[in-house]
Length: 467
Image 1: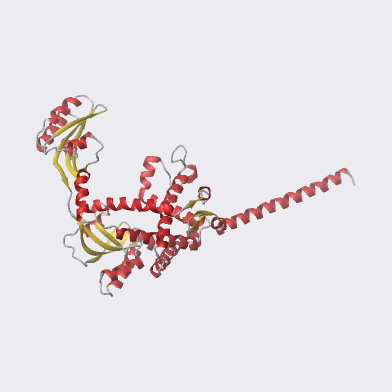
Image 2 (image 1 turned 90 degrees about the vertical axis):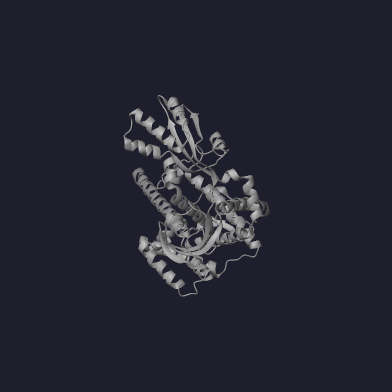
């Protein structure tokens, strides 16, 4: 055998080995891809556990993306404007701050929510609260909504879930997570129902913290540049609101910078109605410390002179809140506003076949309501405050012609709401105080739970979810 022949044989051997190696690597890569897509690795990794519950990484991935999607729906513009965040880019390649990526930021947020859920779920288990037929019906409805969304996207439900909540996440993972969420919600509802406060407690708290519920109507204009101090002193001499407006109009005209229409606009914009006490500035101490209508004050900050005038002295914004139930048929869940409208009419027709009682409405809310904030309570919102909900929702609640038992379909940006009016609630300031007292008590309960129930987290595992 010549050296050349021997060499060629060795070369052939090398090529053969290389070919086998490439093939083996390909097989391994395909195998890893299959395993990843199947979610086996996610389900084999524990993200958190407590005495009665274990949350694997597939479940945590669902919770993570649920949290992320919710944040984007609510605050995407804020994150983009103030942080330059781009929700369409890799979360791991964008920094929230010098040490934290956006992926880590949302993992931390999801972990905090999971902590609350597991504490509440453990308490629910101890109190004998279980998943019942209504809960199973809700879970079934959630899956059906995912199936509808998948159909509208033109993909399989399996692919839609993986694309939305992470590669490897399956329907069963969502169902398992929802069971913990529902237990936690039921325990929370039970806690809320137990938090009762007497009128005396509310009144005593108000007397001790009255400034915190006070508002005032004021006017405000800031001068800067040449003649700023001189102009502010001139405006501060005003003794009434009309004088304030007239002096400011004269000053702006004399500057020669603005047209008459612009001056009118600038003067109109000086009015601030419902200015709230924060306790963070000397201005607040002045406004809410006994200043009367017509009182004026100049505040100098960084070379700018701002002249304030009290138009309406400190007052309590007192009105009667409202209690309602509703069923949200969301446009997202149905695929379009038109389809949500059709479904809402179907649910309303079903309600009209009942005795039209609150109990009947609650039963349908537990079946059809897609509002996560009120599902567990059967669509209930008590002591609805103004400037808290979208305009159409609020207008319906506070319509003066509204009577107990009234029901109607209304449209908002979220979809169609089937509304049911229960009646009047507390006075607005009483409702605010009740919320604050309830939050304080709930925080103490959470502290108790945190010492009573041991929750173990595996941070490194959490960071292994698909991003």
